[in-house]
Image (tube, rainbow, N blue to C red; front, side, top):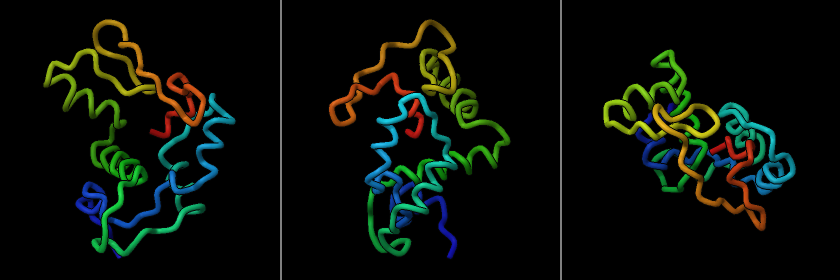
Length: 133
């Protein structure tokens, strides 16, 4: 069965979410310096989470779908996701302080301070392991 981008964008694909893997957050906390690639999170979802439903038969927010969409964009454009965002969204809209954390820097000025991100009791905004997002 083929799952189109519309299912991914509308969270109706039923694809397993890597956040459904209860141990995933433990890995993020245990190894804060580790980066996660989209392929790693997708593989994690395939191995440790169950599909929610048949495509089109339900709705469930799913981070894995965004990972897949990013990879589709990279495949179609031949560029990294952060380059595509910069060229097609940030620059045309004058968003010169926008960037993709852990992958790029703002075009002008220093990055704005990050808002605190809490994972259980740990403040994780500086964790490289947050690259899964």
